[in-house]
View 1 (tube, rainbow, N blue to C red):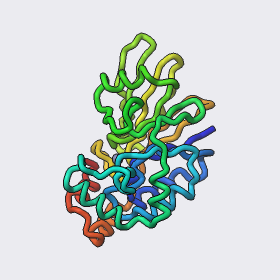
View 2 (cartoon, rainbow, N blue to C red):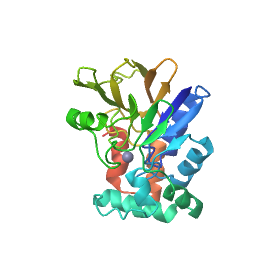
View 3 (tube, rainbow, N blue to C red):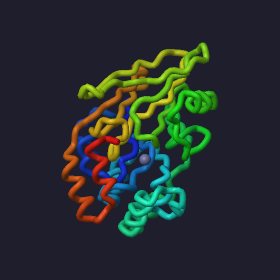
View 4 (tube, helix red, strand yellow):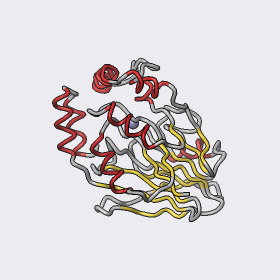
Length: 249
Ligand code: ZN
C-alpha cells in the first residue's frame, strides 16, 4: 500500500491542489494529520477537497478544533485568533460538523500510527530530540506520522536508544528525498506543512509512505503563493499571515 500523507493544509487550496497534481494517481490511500483549516483563505474549499479524497484516517489539529468551536482559541496569539474567528464565520454547517467529529489521535493505520502533535498530547509541539524520544517510547508502531510544527523532517530512535534528527535536505530545491526505514528503529516523521511551511522552504511539503518497500518519501512542490496571498488580502486576513507564506517562516 502506498499512502499519501497530508498535513497542516491550513485552508490553502492553491497549495493543496499543487500537491495533489504532483501526487497524481501515485497512491492508494490518503492520510491527513490535521490542521485542515486556519490561517488561509479557503476553509470550505479545502475541507470539501479533503472530504472528497476520502482519507483512511484524519486526526484533528488545534486549528480544526478552534475553527469548529470545540476550542475557544484562547491560547492562540492575536493574529491566529483573528484568522480563527474569520474561519468559523466562513465554514458551512456541514463542514463544521465534519471538523467536530474528527478523531483526537493517535490512530492506527496499517503498520503505523498518526497524530497531530505527539503520542502523549495532540497539541504538543515536538521540536527537540528529548520530546521526540519520550513520545516514541510510547509508540505502539515503529513508524509514527505527526504534523503541528510545520517542519519537514522528524526523528529516529535507534535500537541502541539513541535519538537522531532526520533531515530531508530539500532546501537546495530538490523535489524529493527517500527515507528507507531500518528494522528495529522507531521513527517520528513529519511530512511538513502544505499550506504554511515554517522550515525556511516556502514550497508546499508533503510525503508518501510505501509499506511494502518500507520507505518514506519527503516531497516539496512549488505553488502560486501570490494567488493565495491575494485571496487572503481580499478576505482581510492579518498581514503577518500573508507575508510569511512567501518566506516559509
Ligand atoms: Zn498547523
